[in-house]
Amino acid sequence: LAHGWTCSTLFWAPVIRRLTADGHRVVVYDQRGHGRSPAATTYAYSPASLADDLCAVLDAALEPGERAVIGGHSMGGMTIMAAAGRRQLTERAA
Image 1 (cartoon, rainbow, N blue to C red):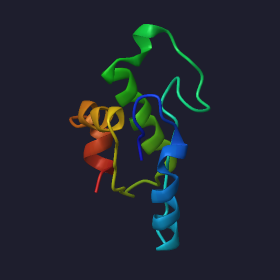
Image 2: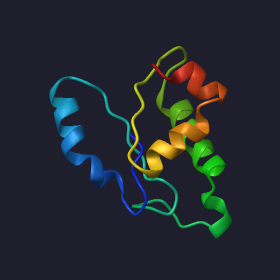
Image 3: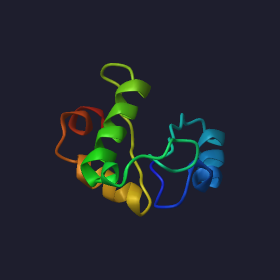
């Protein structure tokens, strides 16, 4: 789950509780400069940079051949769209 601008992983708390209660594994991360992630330079917040981060999270969180349902809110949705043509999304998104 990718949160929106000025949010953090806490934004997803009700969704995480529901999904985990239903037996799903949930992966969330703080987008750069949000929540517990460090701030970056102004230029580091481009859609391409945020897509890089999402792809890195997928690579780190999923086993080879494993796929995930990916959801985003606001900037998180834009991050997913920016990553849409990348190999990691093609291979990792369910």
